Figure 1 (cartoon, helix red, strand yellow):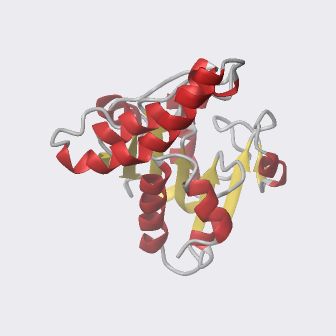
Figure 2 (tube, rainbow, N blue to C red):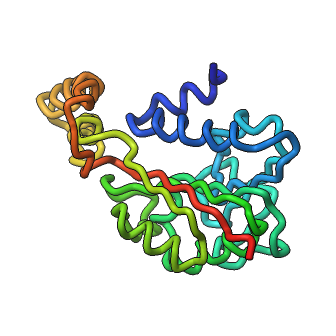
Length: 228
């Protein structure tokens, strides 16, 4: 079971339970002492999953997350002060939308992971603007596959995180913040915001009805740096 801090973080949005499960898969795939870089880690909410690893974090000086100030590596993700092939795995969750040149970042992650090492990545398809002005992109399955391949990775697998109803549920939860009704002067707006916040998780339970999974909140990708 996740600790209290991780549980609180995961509960904040409907996609995070899917992201947590994906990151747990990454942690379970790595042996004791494996070197892992959490790129753009922020407050490192998934650190506890890597207690058996040599887990390191990176972030940049403009991060809005307080925990980023204590990152092991501070610098831009397209120019990391790290030697080639330093890590057995690199992980980056919900970061790629915040970089101006995602291909340059993926090439840098390819450089710092050892040949045969793995990339574990999540990126959003549907979300409101956030962490402005550093919010540049949203990603489809095919866009991620193309970028990761162009960066030099192989064995690429991209999967949706949730389905249509989780997306709809999260959009309902976001209504108050996205429209301003949640903290607005009108009582009616605040009531609507509170109601949709509670309705969102109930809608998400209908995900089993989504057979196509073409409008998820986010995608998860795993890939490998080839040995040759």
